[in-house]
Every structure is written in structure tokens, then in C-alpha cells.
Length: 220
Image (cartoon, rainbow, N blue to C red):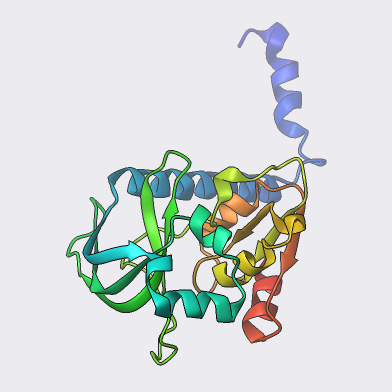
């Protein structure tokens, strides 16, 4: 630059005492990684398709499913509002550009709750065993994406309640106080779910009284 402007430039690059560049670039890197992860999941969602094979019936039409929901204390109107259905026997197959070899998932006597985006796209299904005999109580389609259930319907200006599981959230929603609530899907919290949680200004965690609940609190 011309001689008359040399001093300001020199001063600019020498004034480093009050700037923690390590912290600055670390924070910017984390922001960038979070952004990439969020965009990546959005791309996956756009290309995701879940095919259901097997007879689907309304959950009320299955006595076994109805008895299970009643026993667990889930209000019927909650399951109705979530378009819950029952599958006696069938398969779930997830396809998408990020899936090299799609593998069907066999399900038997499952109470199924579909998980949609705010645009009505199906991206996951929680399939809960109603026989209470299966070693795996809950199944999800392979390679599906697990957001926070009902994330898009939240009122972010009010307190939001985070439940560890969908069943406990549904039981709690029987009380209007817990209407503004969400639930994790499956064990642990994914990076995508963390991205969504970071957008909630007022969050109350309602964990289970077990090791998984303690781990969820520590992780958040």
C-alpha cells in the first residue's frame, strides 16, 4: 500500500494481545461443522423414502394394541393425533442416495408411530412391541433419520419439555401442561438432534430415573 496507509495496516496485524485466535477459530470451526451436519441431514431427508410392506390397521382396531396403550397409560386421543397404526407382520425398507445397500427390517405385532417433517415427509417410524415378549422393545427403520419428535410444532417462546422417550412424552401429554414437548427417538442423542436442541432457548429435561437418563443429562 502507499506509505501514508502503511501505519494503519501494520497496527492492525500487531494488535493481537486482546484476541484469543485459538478460541476464535475453534468456535468458528464448530459452527461450520454444525452447519455442515445440519445441511447433510437435510439432504438425506430430501432423498429419504420409507416403504411399508404389510397390512396396516388403525391402532384402535387391534385389541392387543389397544390393551397395550391402555396398560401403559397413553391417552387414546394422543395416539389418534399422531396417526399411530398397528402392523401384525411386515417389513420396513428405507431407501435414499446415502444408502448403498438398503436392508428391509422385519416387524411383528408393533404399534407404529410415524415421524414427519414440518412438510409432511415421512422420515422415521417408531415401532413398539405390544407383546412385551420381544428382546427389542423398540425398532426403527434402518438408515432412517431420527429428529426430535414433533420438533416443528414447538412454541419456542415458551418452556419446552424434553423427554427421553416417545412413550413417556405421550403419557405426559395427557396433561395440557406438557403440550409443548418433544422426545428423543432411540438411545442417545444424535448430532442432528443436538443441532435442533441448540435452537431451544428454554429447555426443561425430563429424564428417566436410570443410567440412560443420567447419561442424557450429562451429554446435554
